Image (tube, rainbow, N blue to C red; front, top):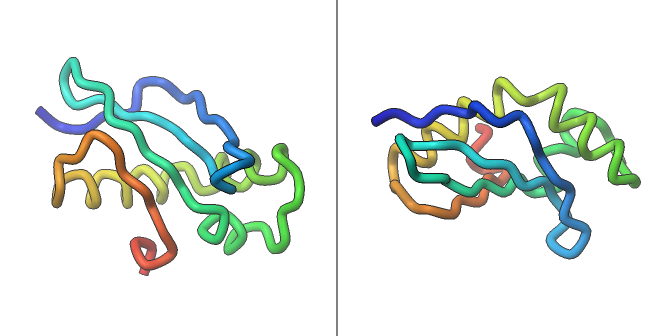
Length: 87
């Protein structure tokens, strides 16, 4: 199977300082987390939940491309995307 992102929902996680979203590999849900530093590259100094979510939405295509690459290399159920993954 290949990874897909049929559900556009995403959630800001204040404790971890980033945005969570999910993908699906067949019937399996795969969890992803994007660190705040990644999102700050698109919107300098985001301070509110809405700003982080807006940055995520603006970067959604590239975030999903990176998520696919990270998942393809690991097939982990939970994946964290960092600034290193976006180089």
